[in-house]
Length: 152
Image (cartoon, rainbow, N blue to C red; front, top):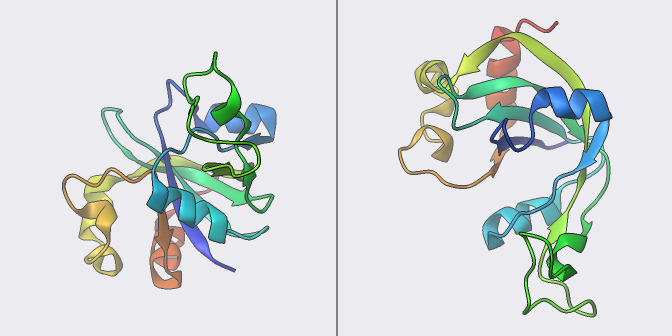
């Protein structure tokens, strides 16, 4: 099993949205490194669900990968904001995975708190300017978050 941190802006898609739907495609990834992370995900991988662009950004709950990567259909839809005119059905550029809800935390494990956890010292997550919406998390980082999590 591998572990991931997946960032989202809650006004676009939140943990509440995922909980209500149960499972949802993680679409709209348009960064090659993040896409490659999606392509390496396996069913059952753990996900730290992270809210960004909020007053207190941080990990708000848990999700899990529910499918291996497959082509993101939004890349082919000219009416969609994630349309990519250079992508072809026979050679799609962009993939997604399905993500399912697992649990919510009673309180946010904030970015400031994550910066204080020794296991995250070298993580791109705690560096200024990190823009990737998907990051691999190692077992020590996962365990450090789980030790602090108050799962509801």
